[in-house]
Each structure stands twice: as structure tokens, then as C-alpha cells.
Length: 114
Length: 112
Image (cartoon, rainbow over all chains, first blue to last red; front, side, top):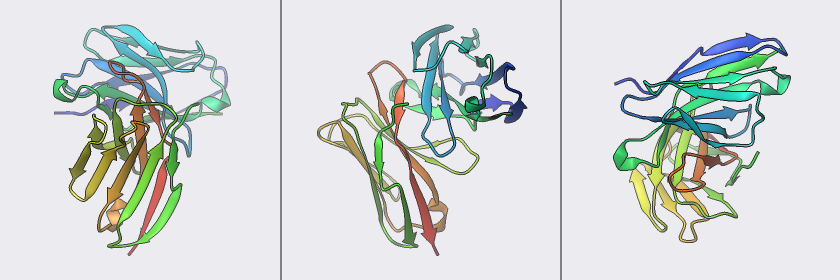
């Protein structure tokens, strides 16, 4: 049973460009959330998707957007990239019904903006 | 962004020693999670706590949900070299959501 999978693992973009990151939740998990982790810091909540809708959002600008597909996979899109967007982007899916409050992370996508 | 106060920030210990770290907040949380993150990888869930006062173990790891619901503690007994890494606490903002506030992390280094 695969856990949370993310792609790509590493990528480099230029300021002003746009990027799309992808996530497949653990089998049977229907809720996906995205976090940004800057170097030396803890993860910061970006937003959460359930039933193909954004349900909650953290303190991130509208340049950050997302999507969830019928198979529960998700995408994170960032437009007009800034140098400060360089970070590890983590996707997390909700735990099993018996432990509904837990979230499990993927390995992350390392984004470098130059 | 908002982060929880986690201490100590870093620690060097000898193999075999016990380790304690804690996380405090000015807000009440419904759930506390503890993660370990190795360099270049995503956080791995260690322990989940759901009720105030709850004490839960996972092998050599023991964590407690503070009675005030504003803090949590993680203890590691008889540390080994593979315990090296960064430990994060995370508090659930509101029941029914999956927005967690993470701590600033405790970097653990074990000397053999």
C-alpha cells in the first residue's frame, strides 16, 4: 500500500514563472492538505482540499492555488514565483477513519526559485 | 507564519541517555502530533494524542497531552544514533479540519 506520493521531487524555476506540484494521497484517504516548509522552519499550512473543494486556507496569497480531482489526487499551483517561494512543499493526507485527526506526509517537492 | 514554541532548539546527547522536549502554545488544541524529519525527507508521524492528560508510548518514545491542552511533551528513552533528526510537534487548530500549527523543531544529535 503506497503512502503519500509527490512529484516532482526537485525542480528549479525562474522568478515570475509558474509551477505545478502533484500529490497522490494514501489509498483510502480523501482529504489532502498542502504545507510549505522553508529551510530551518516547521511546515506552514497552505490549504486543505476535500470533495474537490478548498475547505480551509492558511495565510498565503492568491498566487497559491490548488485543485483536487475525483480520485482524491491534488495539485498545488504557484504563479508569479518569488525568490521567497523557495521551500520544501509537503502534501499530507488524512488518517484512517479510526484516527481521523492524524495527517501523513509525503516526501515533499523541493522548489528552488532563481 | 504562526509557529509553536518548542524547546530545546537543539541538543547533543550521549548514546543511551534519555531525551525530553516540549511544546507550548497560548492556544488550546484538540490534537497533538509528534513527527521526526530526517534531512531531505518528509516528516514521519511518531505519536498522536487526542485527549488532555493522555500519555501514549511508541517503543522508546512517550508523549503526553498537557492537561491545560496548551502543551505537549515527548520523551525518548535510551537514545540510539538513528534518533538523530529534527522533531516537530503540531497542534490541531480546530476539530474537523486538518490545519495544524507546527513547532519550531528540536534538532537532536546523538554522540556514540
